[in-house]
Amino acid sequence: MKHRASLWLLAGTLLPAAAQAEPGVTLYGVISTAVRYTSNLDGRHDNQAELVSSGIGGSRWGLKGTEELGGGNQAVFLLENGFGTDDGRTAYNALFGRQAYAGLTGTWGSLTFGRQYNALNNIGWAFNPLDQSWGNFWSDPLYTGGDIFFQDYRINHSVVYKHTLGPVSVQLDYGLGGQPGSLARGSTFGGGLMFQQGALSVGVAYDQRRVAGGGNTLHNYSAGASYVLGKATFYAGHMGRREAAGDARFGIGFVGVGYQLTPALHVSGAYYHYRQRGDVTTQFQATPVWLGGGRADSVAAVLDYALSKRTSLFLEADATRARGGAVGRETEYWGGQPLSGVDSTTRVGVMAGIRHLF
Image 1: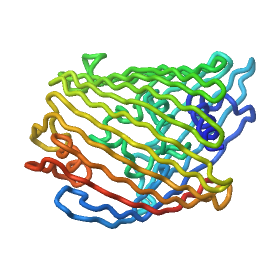
Image 2 (image 1 turned 90 degrees about the horizontal axis):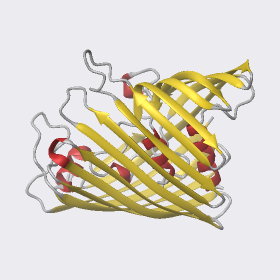
Image 3 (image 1 turned 90 degrees about the vertical axis):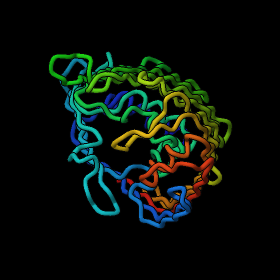
C-alpha cells in the first residue's frame, strides 16, 4: 500500500495535474512536528533536545489548479508554501518558497515555468527506503556530508518538461542563471528517467549547476531501484556529486526495506554508506577549512502508525559514525562548527511526532 502511494506521488510530481480532469482550485497541505533528542550533536559530546518542524514530511500548504483549454490541453498552476511548525515562520524566506509555477499540460506532456523541483530530487527521494511517500525526515541519512546530493532541490527561473509514456516517465529541466553577460554562470540543467512495471521501479537522474561567480561546476547524479514482494518493498540506490574545482567527490549508497506489518503500521529500516575524497573543504566557514577524505556509516529505522487516513504517529531512531574528513562535514552541518583533531565521532538520535494531511 505504501509503495503504491509512493509511486502515485512520484507520478504526480513528474507530470503535475495531468491526471486532474476536473478544473478548479484545490487547497492541500501537510502539518508535521516532532520532539527529537540527539546525543553528541557537535562531536564535543553536547546533547540536544528540541521540538523540530517537519519531523517526517515537510510542513506545507499549497494551492493547485487546472483549467480546460480544449483539445485535451489544460492550463495548470501550483503555489506551495513551507512553514515551521515549531515557530510558525515561513520557510526559505519566501511566501511560496517550496514551489511556484504555471504552465500547460496535455497528451504531449507538460511544460511549466517558475520555481520547481529538479529531476534529481523527484527520482532520488523515490528510492530512499525511509521516504515511504511522505517525504524526507528531519535527520535523514541522505543529509550526510552536508545535504549536498540534490543540487538545492528546487530550481529558480526554471523551465521543466515532463512526459509519461507507458511505464516510462521523463523529466528535463533548465534553470536560467540570470547573470548579466553570461548565459552559463548560475544556470542549471538536468533530467531523469523513471521506469515502473509491475513490482519493479528503476530510476536515474543527473543535474549540473554552474556557480554564479564562475570557477566551479557541480555535477550530481542518482540511480535507484525498488521491488515489491508481498507486503515488503526493497530499495537500493546510489547518489554522487563531483565539484570541478579541486575535484572534490562525494558518494552515498544505501539499501533498505519497508514492510506493511498491519493495515495501520508500517516499518522501515535502512543502511547508508558515505564517502568523500579529493580537495574537500568545509561548506559554511568564511575561510574554508581543508578536510580531505573520509567515510561515514548510518543506520535508521522508522515506525509509522496511521490513526486515520489523514493522521499518523511516527517514531524514528538513527545513528551515524563519521571518520576522517567526514567528521568535519558532519559536525559543521549539525553543530555549526567543524571539529578537528578527532579521528571519529558518533551521533545518535531518536524522534517521535505526529503528521496530519489535509
